[in-house]
Image (cartoon, rainbow, N blue to C red; front, side, top):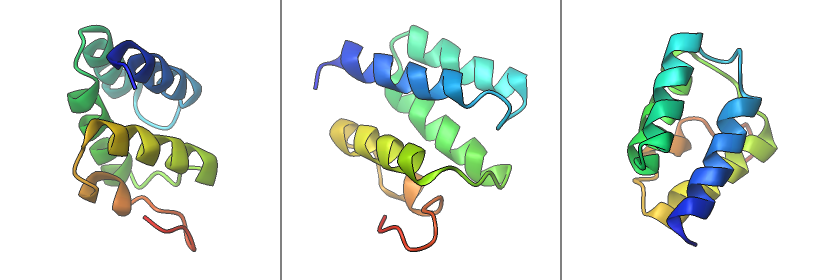
Length: 88
């Protein structure tokens, strides 16, 4: 998958997740995506979701896991967010 497609998909998820994190943190992650750093953005986003104890919908988890796998991100970032019964 091309980088700009990954950035587009991640941006859509971030925009749809408004309210899950404090706005300042979410805007920081969005800025990283726009700066061409989707890997760093995804790691930070997943870490913050975990730190704020956000329960994410199964479909969002699968999308984030897919993006992470495509980019070669360490699975530890999404495994701890796996919904009950979902394989990480």
